[in-house]
Length: 441
Image (cartoon, rainbow, N blue to C red; front, top):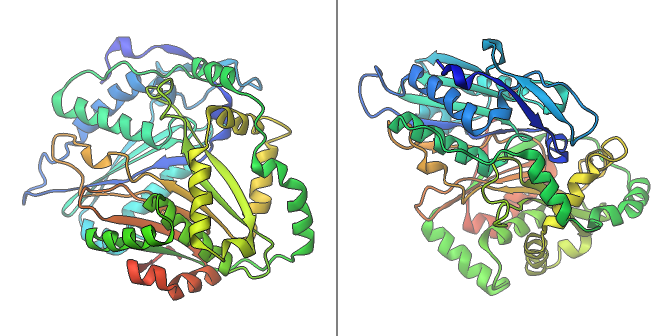
């Protein structure tokens, strides 16, 4: 149980970042049980009690499931957490017929029972402006291990803050210590960000007129079935890939080089398209002024190029990708987020209409490879496997957390035409093991 002084009314502020991010953040953690007996392994009561204590002190705004809505992003809303119903739901599941190995062979996808739990839980986590639950936690006890399936609204955390929260929770569970006092002042964060902002029109904004014209000129194809692929390379294959990169575009990071390969493949698959689009999830957390803020410091930055140019030269495409990442600024972050509050979510609606349309080549990359998920330890050892939910949205690409063995693992979802182009690409086939991941029907 929580101490009585933990159960109190709290007033919390919203900022434009809250209304901009409305997707759930989740990274299922799977812990293998090295013992023949499951008794005491990843004890549910310890995990639940320490989860609530860590959440109360580190992310108190996540405790409110029924915030009072406000049309002004700067106006605080009231969250009352003195009733048990106000605490996030923590659920225990037992499935002694499922193994971690079975989940790994299936790609951790929703047709495996514990992942159905994750999928259903993620539907509950929404934007705080709508008054929906912000957090759910499912702990699944399997035949040979335990899955910890935490889902938090992206308005509450970005992936780095998510991992830092779970790391802190692990320390509390393992050592019995109190969580550290973290920076969760959302209004102070936004006041600081907006004070540094200057008008920085995004490439996408400047491109809207041409997008409208292209939408009229190029008839969009019917939606196609999509496939999720797992691209993996061990340390030796990564060395070979680095040599290829050095020949084609020296100075480009390997993730940006891989992103360029995949973006070119999406463009090859859409011969009638006029433009090809790329986006990357970028953070301002690298700025020391925001390094300790436990909230969402990430957003997507979009760039575009003529489709014919994207398919010509992987090296040039890699330069574009790396430049877009290198030039991301606090001012651009603030400007992009401010667009979410203008004209009925104009920016979000425009991105969905044009970049998300069938027949338009695009790749959206999320790179969490350097986030230390494999350092998490609740007292029973580090996770056997960490996954990001490989959402079946065509064009989404995830660079997974690294285990320290020098390899890499990338998941990408592609429409049928782009999937065929991926399988036929010699650069991909010569550097990666490519596996098709079964998806829920």
